[in-house]
Image 1 (spheres, protein in one colour):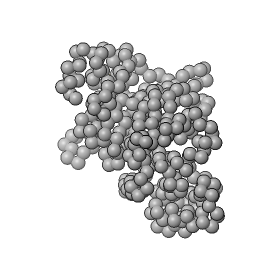
Image 2 (cartoon, rainbow, N blue to C red):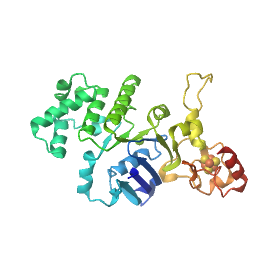
Image 3 (spheres, rainbow, N blue to C red):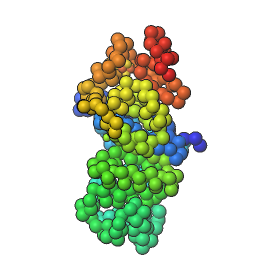
Image 4 (cartoon, rainbow, N blue to C red):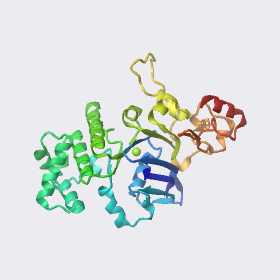
Length: 335
Ligand code: SF4
Ligand code: MG
C-alpha cells in the first residue's frame, strides 16, 4: 500500500445555536506515505487541530459533524467504523500527543500507573510486566530517573518531563501513525529542541509515520518531508518541504515565510501578514485570503480558487489557475 493515511475531501463542520454552520475543515485532502513526516502549518484558527482530531475521530459530535469525505487508514475508512473499532485503533495503531500533556494525562493517577494501564488494556500484559515496560518507556524518552517519574503525579513534573511522559504513553503500543498537535509550543526553546529530536529518533527507530501540526516554520524546516499549508479551513498549498521553502507559490505561504527571522537578517523589523484569520462563521466569499492578500485581483473576491497541480506541488490561487487568461502566462513563467 502506497499511503498509510489518505484524507479525501474531508468536511468537518460545527453547528451553532441557531443552526449557524461553521466550516472549520472545509474540503481538505492530503496523503501521507508510510514512514513520512507531514507537517500541517498555518496560523491559529486555520483548522489544523480539527483536521487532526478528525483523523482520531475525536471531534465532539454534536456540535461537530463529519459532513462528508473519507479518512482512509490502511485503506479503511475511519468515518465508517464503529466506536469500538476506532477505540481499538487509537493507541494500537494511531496515537496522538497534544500541546498540553494534561489533556492526555489523568491528574489523579501516577504516571507509571497510567502508562501501565494502557499496556494492560491494549497489549494484554500482566501488571508486573506492564510496570516494567512503563519504566522502560520512560527511560526510552529520556526521563533521567524513570522510577521516580513513574511514581509521580503529573503536576509534580516539569512541563518538559510531562511532555516526555505523554510521548512515552503515546509510544506504549508502538503506533504506526503519530499525530502531534503543537507538542512543543508551550516549552522553552531548549526543551523544545530535545522533544523534537526525541520524536525524530523514535520515528526512525520504529519506522513510524508522523503528522505534525505547528504554526512554526522553523520546526517545519527541521522535520517535515512534505508540508500542507492551511488557511481558513482549507489547504492552500502542498509540497515537498524543500520545494516549499525554495519556491513558495501561494501568497499566504510567502507571507508566513517572510515572518521568520533569519540569522543573516538586516531588516530592522520583521514583516507580518496584515489582518487576521477570519472566523469560520464569517469566511469571506471567493478566496478566503483575499482581504489580506497583497496580490488579490477582482476574481479573488467572488470565486474560490481550485487546486492546481504543478508536478506534485499543489496550490489553490488564481495566480496559477487556468480560468484567468491574463494570469496564465505568469503561471507558466513562475512554475
Ligand atoms: Fe491572493 Fe487571489 Fe491568490 Fe487568493 S486567489 S491568494 S486573493 S491572488
Ligand atoms: Mg490548534
